[in-house]
Image: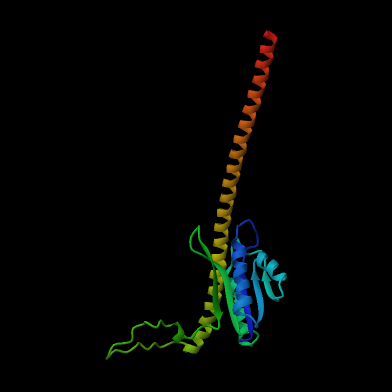
Length: 225
């Protein structure tokens, strides 16, 4: 393996806490550690990832800006996926990795790394603990129309498209969740600051009133004397 393409999904906008930082750190670790010594190029979905990539020596093959965070059409994923498949089939790249944010809950979004090309063989996808057929039993033999090669030729590219589309959707969902949490934290911090400043103001005002009263009382006592 000499040439590797990395598809990095980030957001177009900021104000979402460490969302983009975590994804970029995932890409940095992959490029600097696991892919060290290999020829790496980037495909960036999102302005934040593109801006980071421009500051690195890693070349950018393509950048898709203005779609993250909104309604994402399937043709965006299929267009990018087809370009990566063509590069893989022609030998321009040997492997393709996908970095995105997996949405688990409103509080948890996990930067995730996945290899999408080459597609693992069927034998690699079968779990080791899968039960073997018992004596006298046989695995079913499926008849494919059209041929299995033609069927796989249609299905495997769609598998890549769907993985990319799923990554874009999960990253967008994660972005909204991260931004909502960041704004909630910022709002709470502002409310706490206002409460603290209000307390300081009240104490300062009370001290000023007390000092004025002391001056008035002192002046009255002086006049009596």
